Image (cartoon, rainbow, N blue to C red):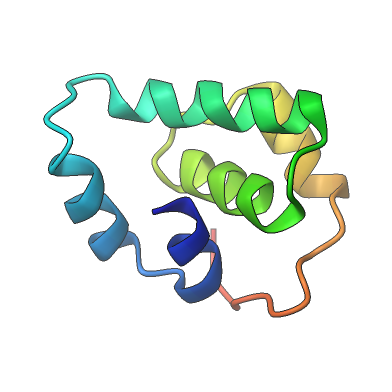
Amino acid sequence: TALAYGADGDLARARSRLDALQDADVGARVAELAGEYIGRGDDLHATYGLALLARDLGVASPLVLEYLASAPMPATPVERTP
């Protein structure tokens, strides 16, 4: 879901996919996972997609917001408005 969101910026589609997990705390889990990816220096596209998704779901931590402010953008960024 995060990789697709990082590529297409379709928040409605991402929410629909996340809703299918039937997890009442899915936003917190996205934010937590984004923080883990940032901490490990995982794949840029996956990390960036998770960070964007957490921010756009309104659950981004200060670490995630700092990452987005300073992270190199993936090779094919999607224009979006915060």
